[in-house]
Structure formats: structure tokens, C-alpha cells
Image 1 (cartoon, rainbow, N blue to C red):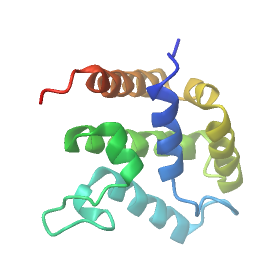
Image 2: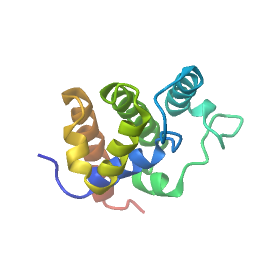
Image 3: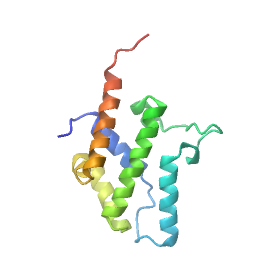
Image 4: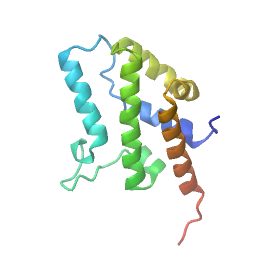
Length: 141
């Protein structure tokens, strides 16, 4: 179903972007607020820490090397928000279950991808294909 290569790397990077605050108890009101802020940060470049006044992120070097374009970087962040939303929903807001899913996903990205909705899997595959296609294009120097 999923080809080796870019997809597992993209998924692992997305999982690493998920906040490490997902470690202990089920979501209380402050945690729910933090979740909303996290999703906003993932979807809105201007809300991310380390952005310039123009909203341009000082991207993680691994993500920047993977996506190689601001458009793909933004698409990556939006997909990470979608995955995070599904993770919270699938775990019923149980932070322990969310952490377990992230930990498993880091060691078995294909199994984690299989737990996502068909629409999210399709979006993940499409993004991985676009990233891979960009890597295979000859350097136009």
C-alpha cells in the first residue's frame, strides 16, 4: 500500500511535531485549550513560534530539507494538524493512549498510518508523492 521512502519519514516527522505535553492525564479544560492552540499553531504559520513578522517560519531543518518549499511545508503542518485531531479523537482525549499511539507510530509508521481515516491516509500519500516527485526532479542549474 505505502511505498518505503518518503512516507515513513514524513509520518515520523509529523509525529515528532506533536506536542510532548501529550504524556499523562486525560484532557481537562486547560489541556483542551492547549490542544486548540496547538492545532491553530499547526494550521497558521503566523502563530508558530520562531516566525518572522511576515509569518515565515524558521522551519525545522529536517522538515525544510524534506519539503523544500514553503507550500509543501504548510501542507505538511496542515496534515500534522489533521493527524493530531484524529489522534485525539481516536484516543477519546486520553493523553496516555495518545502518547502510546505516538510512540508506536514512531517505531511502526505504516501501522500508525493504517489507523488514520481513509481521507487522511490519502492526503498523507498524496503529500508523500509530491515530496518524492520533487526529490526526483533533476536539478535545474
